[in-house]
Length: 113
Image (tube, rainbow, N blue to C red):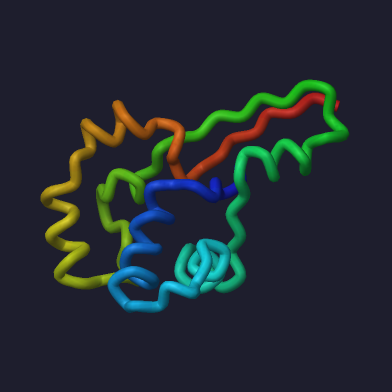
C-alpha cells in the first residue's frame, strides 16, 4: 500500500493549506510532506506507481476509500477546526462512494515477479 497522489484527502488538505490560506504556490507534494500522516510523507500517481513496479510482470492496482476520505470516526485530529467539524456532518459519503471510488487514500498494489 502506498498513498495515492490524486485523492479526496489531498483535495481537502489542498483547500485548507493552499486555497484558504492563500499560498497558491504550494504543491500537493509539499502539502503531503507537511500535513498528511508524518513529516516527509509521499504520495504517488498511478503512473509513478507503475514505473516503480516496472520489473514485475503482473501488476494490479486498486484504490480504496479510507475513513479519512469519508470523514468518518476520529479522522483529521491534526487539522481540527470548525470547518472540519461542519464538513464531517455534511460530507456526501454516498456521493463519494459512487462518484469517486478511485480517489481513495490507499493505493493497493499486488505485483508478481
